[in-house]
Picture: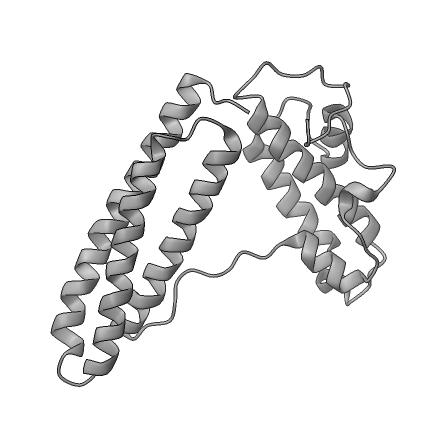
Length: 210
């Protein structure tokens, strides 16, 4: 799906800021590695040095590919690559400074529910799956047209209340939690697409594959 001009400019600007910031931090990490690892951890130094040089090389490649991104799927792939490189930098920097890693792998609630509750195929396999914004907003309990920030805040609040850990292990609320997760995932994509093309009628069925 093509970007609007304003959306593309915003995406490119944000990516460039992250790239420049990470490159600067990587160069700082290399300097600190020389100062702190060369005497007592020389074997580790050479491995870390190579890894950080690969981080810089990857950043250069990502920046070069920014100019070729013209649609949402391409942007998501490139942003995923940058996030992977950010994680690699953090891995090396934490070793240099001998600190715990700051970044953590994000928990996928869909995978968590699938593992915890047994059952299951993908959410979209449900014949009663959410396929319009009116239903999705209603399930989330927020006013139609609310921003993604408001939707996310509502989701987090409700997810905490419905999660089995908040109910002494009782999984009775899992169906409601699954339904709310599906509505949240729908609205994330629905609101993202609304910034790149005219908004669909709210009650028109919509498939992410469109």
